[in-house]
Image 1 (cartoon, rainbow, N blue to C red):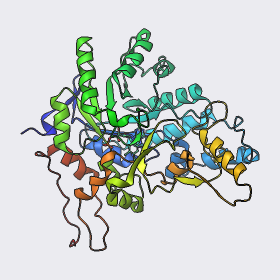
Image 2 (cartoon, rainbow, N blue to C red):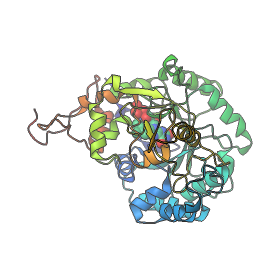
Image 3 (cartoon, helix red, strand yellow):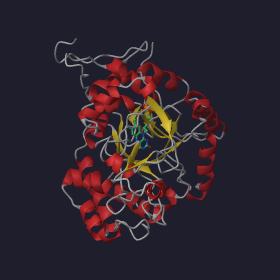
Length: 421
Ligand SMILES: Cc1cc2nc3c(=O)[nH]c(=O)nc-3n(C[C@H](O)[C@H](O)[C@H](O)COP(=O)(O)O)c2cc1C
């Protein structure tokens, strides 16, 4: 019986273990996690979501505080059009995050950065160009374009000296989206180096409608895309993502034309991931009934999360002067509208409840939006229960190697730290 290690992801002459740890903003797929994937010969992702606050936490910069200070006069104003990112600071934050990660890289694997198009930052093109170019400047091995169609994103960096040498990939959830991307980018004569096909069971934002994700399945979409690429004689590695929980699940995709798998949820409970230990325990204890796909993200994309996420219903004042990563270019964000509506309807309330949208910047920054893949409720089966009722944390190496070597649908448990119950 085959295991994942019997396969290799090939980029030209370079061969990697075909396991990619997916991008998880905001700093959930931390540098430490990505570095482990690279050390073990696979691909790790860092994320550039809210990179200025990530830089503040990691490098003691003051980008967020300074931005808030600069726009403080606007905090009570619901028109956020004045709130812009300083592009030089954005570049600096990206270079710090990417540069320090790449300096620490060991092993034969690679480190990519996940860039979400939906982080429109009140000036979508200008900010995205800076994010992409600065990541390339700082030596990132590759960029994965996600959460959006990214139809013009390659063109933003076509003059960059690393445009053809860095790996550039896209995430799609349908053949149609892929075809559209390739058509729009044909004039650049630069195809993506890999295509992540993300199905409906993934964590984070979903590329399916709120009430239609149940009608799709990853294996069918992957098969369709693999067949189409073959018919078009396009040799681009396809990477399957979403709900791949065991090495055996992964082998199923590798045997059916995928070049690698992208996985994330199983790494949310590793000590290297950015989630605080307390939050990791919520992921461990989750049952199937605790998970929902909802519409609270202001991006307009459905998102899967634990129903107990503190983000749901939390009517905090929009924090765009400090953050503002989802402002659409005219100073709007769907959360601002929902918040204003509730404030107008409840003029005497000290704090309102906002159920239909959430202030995603603040909530992700505070690790209060507990987004997860569908199979989060199986995490409890991947470790030991400790005498105090909590679950034993896992190392990224343990989970990575379990994906790499396990067979027969088995999940290897870690060595016990203390006597279990
Ligand atoms: C906590 C969490 C955060 C995520 N954040 C992002 C993100 O910022 N950008 C993105 O493209 N995908 C994001 N994803 C999706 C993953 O990168 C990955 O493609 C998917 O979750 C794989 O499915 P699995 O979690 O079932 O293994 C996130 C997933 C999780 C679990």
